[in-house]
Image (cartoon, rainbow, N blue to C red; front, side):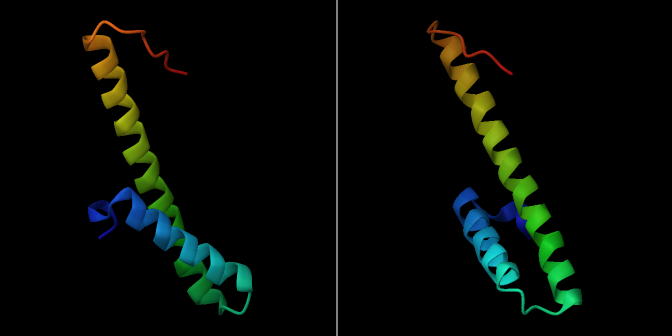
Length: 71
C-alpha cells in the first residue's frame, strides 16, 4: 500500500513510472493505471514533506530559535 512506503521508496517508484510512460510504448489502459498510481505516490510524498515541515517548524519554535514562516 502507498501509505506504508517511505519517501525514498515512493520517489523511486514514481521515477520508474515516469520513465516507463516517457518511453511511450505502454498500452493506454496500463498508462492510465500507471498515471493514477503516480498521482497517489506524488500525494503520499507531498504529505510526508508537509509533515516534516511541520515537525521542523515545531522543533525550531520550541527551541526559541528563529521562527520559520509558513507560506
